[in-house]
Image (cartoon, rainbow, N blue to C red; front, side, top):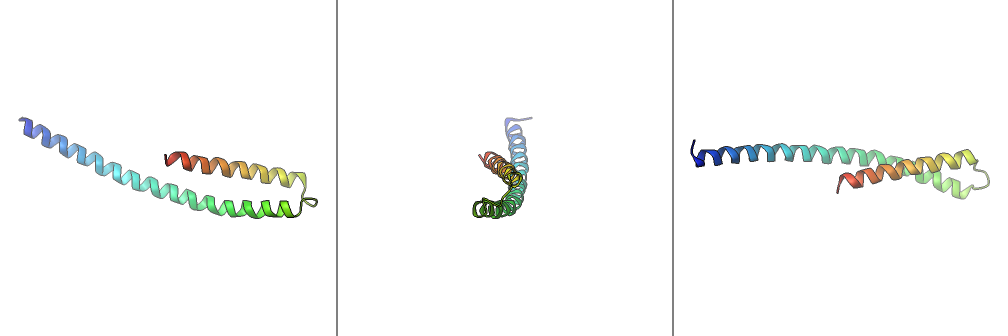
Length: 87
C-alpha cells in the first residue's frame, strides 16, 4: 500500500467517525430538548405551588411547604444536570 492509499483510508475513517458523531450530537440535542420541555412543565407546577404558598402562608401546612421545597430542589438538580450536559 502506498502512502496515498493510507491517507485515503484515514480520510474515509475520519469522515465516518465525523458523520457518526454528527448523528449522535443531533440525537443528544433532541434528548436534551425533550428533557427541557418536560422540566419546563414541572417548573410551571412549582411556580404555581410556590405562589400559592407565598400567598397563603398561614393556611399552608408544614408538609406542603416541605414538599414544595423538595420539588424545588429536584428541579434545581435537573436544570443543573442539563446545564452541565451542555458544557
